[in-house]
Image (cartoon, rainbow, N blue to C red; front, side):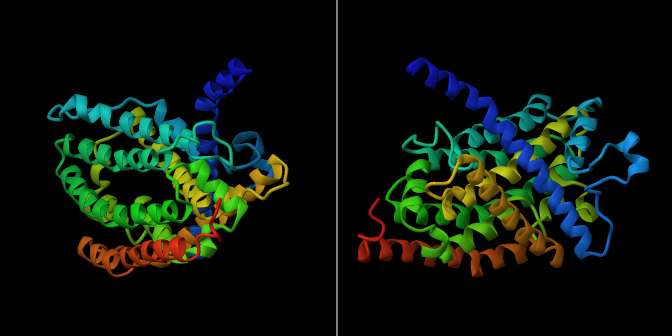
Amino acid sequence: MELSSQIISLASIAVLPLASFIVGVVYNYEIRKISARLQSRRGPWLLVPKPLRKTLGTTRLFQPLYDVLKLLYKESLVPNTSRTRIFRAAPYVALLCLVAAATLIPFAGYSPFASFELSLVAVLYLLLGVPLAFILGGAASSSPWGAVGSMREAELMLAYETPFVIGAFAVAVMADALSMQRILNVQISQYPFLLLNPFAAAAFLLAIVGKLHLKPFDIPEAEVEIVAGPITEYSGSLLGIIEIGKILLTSVCISLFVDLFLAGGVIPGLQYQLTTFIFLVEGFLIVAFATLIHTLNPRFRIDQALRWYVKIPILLAIVGLAWAYTFRYVHPIILRG
């Protein structure tokens, strides 16, 4: 029995990140499709017309995956004046952090590693490593656009990480746990934290918009100003690794929100297939809301982004944390797991 559980745990190290990547591909398709419709453009097909199916296949749902595969087959050009080792290592460090985070975040309520006592803290640290890797990669590229983009990323990171971390710890206070699995269990036995603490949920969601560099927070990669920011000098397979990381980051952040505030889609008594369906539907709704913000807003300047995060998300996160402490100690019976 112990051997079989070890085999399942080892298999999950590969299966959970792969499932997260596939879901992230679909999420990125959704962002493209909704953005196109809201801007009266034609986005990628869902079903390809019959005359073109022999050439293009039956669907373009996995168009983000095709784009990544194209990059992986190309040669990477490394600037002669760059710090080569740091420049090459940065995309792999970011990807490694995201793969590790994906194994700790329950997917539709399942992860053999989520019961680890400090799994929430580990996830927050791993997700912090992603922007830090991009900052180092851009700074090591010897490109002026990369340096400016890295500087903007560092400043923006301070803004969005604050409500991101405070919102997550507000949930931990209400659940009286730092384990992802215990946080899920409290919600399953009582109520989703979206209902109990909407302040922390709103702050966390707005932090995700900044973490994913959706408008109005795409300042580090502003194409018309600094080409592509920290990733300007990346090409070929290295750029493909970065795009894989971006896809995983989308899926991981959305899954983390669903687990922390929507009980991971788990409803007692339902089969795992239905739980997975609910988990994905909740993720699609969160992505649709983030895409709405992305499409309807122009890009902020870095100073505007910092002021906005201080005025709204950080304030909401602080209110959510205060509410979590109040609710925890004023109504301990309601949250008793």
